Length: 399
Ligand SMILES: Cc1cc2nc3c(=O)[nH]c(=O)nc-3n(C[C@H](O)[C@H](O)[C@H](O)COP(=O)(O)OP(=O)(O)OC[C@H]3O[C@@H](n4cnc5c(N)ncnc54)[C@H](O)[C@@H]3O)c2cc1C
Image 1: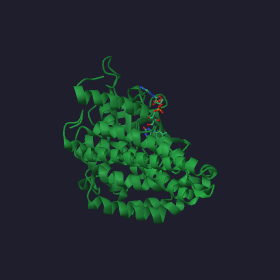
Image 2 (image 1 turned 90 degrees about the vertical axis):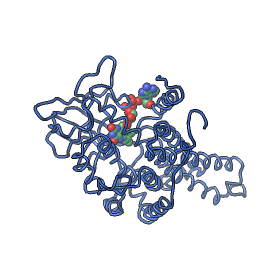
Image 3 (image 1 turned 30 degrees about the vertical axis):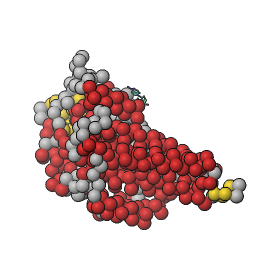
């Protein structure tokens, strides 16, 4: 097999007719219920409650979560299909459902059986919502730099600190919170972080200001303040002081979902640009007949399909638990989100002045795409991961 992969299995994308049936049903929901309301979501900066409830009724909150924990099963590939199709209409909507992964994945992978039953089941069924609070004013990419502390007092931990850019915090019933239980070790900066489940309504937990970011209108993040929040010790997720590994494991998995957001945005922007290029006449010809526009359309389509292949490939590897999924997830996340940004930019250009007009619904793709290049590990961080994984995979070396 091609360097540095070992087997043909490493290149297989596993899709079956169930995946296609599911895609069709999500697309139908989106075309009928969401597309006609995109402007309302943008203008009110909120997802209508009845759309969210309908997604719960359709079982979307359980897609990818094992049936024994209240989910619909289907693995990451099914979740990627859902995210792509929702993002084609509204990335905010896909985030409203998808943010639960940042809670469910760490609890399912590292939490006790009690935590899984108590917290994952209601989230999967859409009876409760969840968020993930790691980023702080002084530490985003540098997760080991967090300052929030958790001090052991009898059978509790007392957590104090400030988190920022927390998606879904205002609606969340449960939050996965990272905090320092011990200072870092000189040889291990990552050591000493622990992750916890914190419930809404616990004394000392406050949801701060809503942060107005450039895209994702409908799903804006929040500041979260923890002022001596008492958390029972059984709510620790994963091994004490090794929460950094829990977090990294979570992001490795969840960033495939961000790649799928990129594919959904790119697909939407491409469809709009292609239709417009066929309809709009300049100098007596449709735009698509002008060589420069023809080339743009071909390049947009190439990047879109490459992004989709990388994303479904990463999801297939993750579903098969193959370690190569780590590098695939970063390749997919960085490529698909940058492709979405570039395709959205070209779609605006092809629409000329109308592309810059909010009413046309094209400029929003660029605002959303830029955000996808930032969260879940910025694309600069993805390049670091790609190089590290490549050298490890190929030569067994650490850089
Ligand atoms: C809309 C939105 C929603 C979010 N939702 C959540 C959420 O739900 N939960 C949560 O915990 N966080 C969330 N975040 C936070 C997000 O994960 C961070 O913003 C992101 O990880 C980057 O961290 P930072 O903003 O502190 O930037 P920094 O880490 O300060 O980085 C600044 C710049 O420097 C670059 N950089 C940093 N280190 C390196 C390096 N070693 N090499 C090269 N370049 C580097 C970065 O790529 C970036 O370009 C969200 C952010 C946004 C915008």
